[in-house]
Length: 221
Image 1 (spheres, one colour):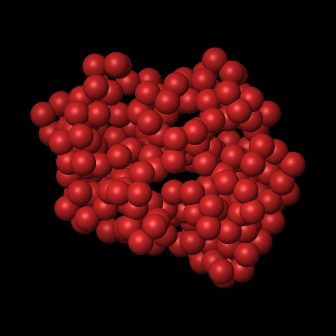
Image 2: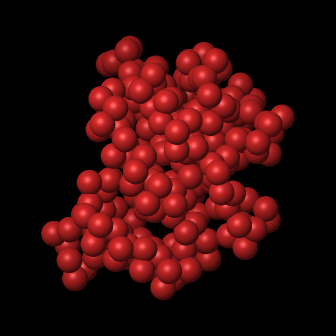
């Protein structure tokens, strides 16, 4: 099973200005100064509750959720996503508190060009205390930049591997990401997936240098 680790706000290590949501992650949630935890998709064969338990067992302090994971062994018909009911989200919050885990990111999730639909994801993030939304929805950039400013929540463009059968898929290329974010709100940047860069025949260190100052989160494998 692949084991992606999640690092939040890596850009603050390199950027000349702070790139963060309104409330910084507390120091007691960091390991050696870095907020590092598990992407719940690591445990996609399990439920969100089990992902929280396994993240805690691994010694991590934070977690990134993804849309559509089954809630728990007791309630597998319920799913964790940005359209979940307030009752479902309350159960997730209680489970996080039980295991002393903080939800800090959500993705990879599609963001709609329709502001009302896009806002649902930001409201979910606000409710859960999430600092970063990770997406590949380049076409919705104009829509969610407005919400980034309103909610003070970061958005990172996540990279899957290069697709030889789809030349229109460009987010695998760090230079492309830099080009589309460089003139945008500084809270919009990259979710740097080092494993997928390697699958695209790119050197992760070179990619990190290209995106220096614009990395808001990272997936490490």
